[in-house]
Image (cartoon, rainbow, N blue to C red; front, side, top):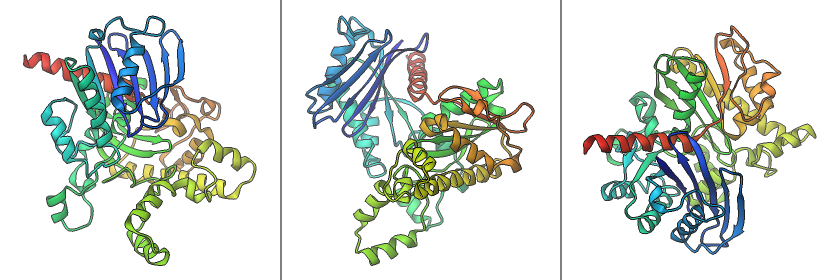
Length: 403
C-alpha cells in the first residue's frame, strides 16, 4: 500500500508518503506558517527537493498543495490520487477511550472533540488535518494513530495522582503519557537490533529532544511514562519545566501577580533549559557550544537535564525490578554524545558502561555498551512515521477481515 502520513499542527502540517511493501519513503515535506506567510518544503525519493513560499490560508489549501506536488510531473511520486490507498493521521490524545489505532469515522471525530480539553493545543489541530483530507479526498479511507494509546497499559498505581479520586471519576484526571508512537517503535526496534524476544525484555526508552520523555516498557507493555496529564510533567525540557511543586505556582502568583494563564505560559514556554540558562537558548546544540566557552548557565542547564534523566532511569529500573536495555532516541538522544556520556555516568551501579569510540556515533543505530555488560545501552533513531504506517496497515487488515 501507499500511505500518506499526516501530522497536523495548529499552523503546520508534516507529511510523508510510505510504500508499505518496502518501507520506502517516497516523499516527505512540511507545510509551515499556514494562515500566515505559508512556506512549503518537499523532497522525493530521488532527491529532488522544493523550497517555496505558497499561499496557504488554511489546512485545506495546505493539503491541496501537497497533493498537487505529489502528482507533479517533475517532483511527484504518483500519477493519480487513487494511488494513495489510505491516509494515516498522528493524533495526540485519545483519552481512555482509544487504546489502539482506529479507522477514522464520524464517531471517532466526535469522541476526539470530547478530549479537546485534555489537549487544547493538539487535538483541535489534528482534527483540522482530518477535515482537510475529508474535503479533498472524501473516498480515501483514513486511520488514526494515537500518541497516548501505547501508554494505556500503565497500571492504576502508575497513572493516578494523589488527589481526591472523584476528579478521576468525573474528569478523568490522571497520567496519560505521551510520545507513545516513538516509544513503541524504539522499544520494539531495540529488541530486534539485539535479537531479543520483545515480550521478554525490560526496556527504558529515553526520547530526548526539545520535548522529552522517558518510558518503561516491560515485556512489550508500558508500565510508566514520565509525561502525565499533559506533556508538561516529567523531565526538564527545551522550554517546559517538567516536575514542579504546585506550591511554587501559588507562591509566584502572589509574588509576581501572575494569572493562571501567565503561569501556564511560563511553565510551557519560558522554563526548561531556556529558563535555566537565563534565556540563552532552548537548543541543546547552542547550549553545548556555550558550555565549551565556559557559559556557567549553559553548563548548569545541561547538568540539570542529565541529572533528571538519570533519576527517571533509576526509578524505572526499580519499577520494572531490573532493566535489559536503555535506549536513547530523538534529537538530543541520537546526536548529543556528551549528554549520553553524562547520563550514563550516573548509572554505573546498574553495571552501565559505554564505549567512548562507539559513543561518537550520531544519528544511527549503535550499541554503546561494552561486550558482556549486564545492561545494553543503545542508540535507536526514532521513526514515528514508519510506526504510524505499520499501525495503519494493521487497521486496514482488520477492516478486510471484518468485511
